[in-house]
Image: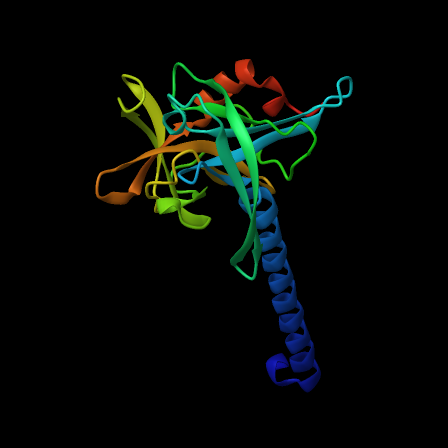
Length: 243
């Protein structure tokens, strides 16, 4: 039989080794994408909530940089003073320093649990910027999703779960619809992003709003539809389709 042929056996081993090496390479590449597209844009807001960098660009005419983070409205409501936005720097999974910026509330969404926070720094372009899924992106019950944030105001945490579907709750507005998903979350995750893998990129599909009492795996996330409805008016460049 061919399976006992030494030459065929050797070729088989080479094929297995090549496949294993390719798998390791792909996994390493995926980790790099996760760091760039999900971890790096996730900030801690006022040592309490979470936020995601969705825009940082220099205006060609004025030369000023506009840097904006997306968060939950309940994280900033009533805050009229300056806030701290921390972007941690990691080495081997340890925070070695925090890049701290000062920000103010740029706006709050009247119809949902969303808000924008703008840095006062007009000189520094930050990145990478998180990508928001296109309007009408197809989402499937049971697909993998990831929640990013700072639970209990501790270090950055990523938790994986499954997408559920729409859920109605009066949390932020009467009869509002949210996405439900199963990543483990806790207080401090609020304002952080919920991602899915859209094509080859990790994309924001929701913003963490709340969890069921005593059940960290039953989370509510402000939906992609609501995010687009808000940003189309409040920050159109963040959801504009590439030309």
